[in-house]
Amino acid sequence: MKDALALCRRRLREGARLMIGVPDYETYVAHMREAHPERPVMSYGEFFRERQSARYGEGSEGSARGFRCC
Image (tube, rainbow, N blue to C red; front, top):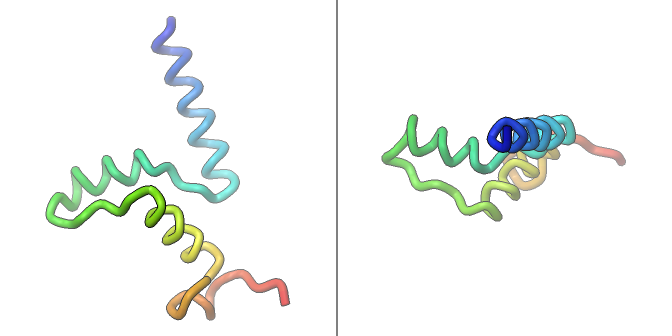
């Protein structure tokens, strides 16, 4: 019962983060270790900044495709 409740909480947290556009760092780390073991894994701070930049188009690469309010 305790494990099922913990899993439910984790899934709700993941769903809420995805709804607001914040991907799950732990899922990213697991994917990188499994699918790309030769590549370095970003720190949480690097991961968060990269995801925000990809979503909102900050920086030199993404500025043309990101969200702009003005």
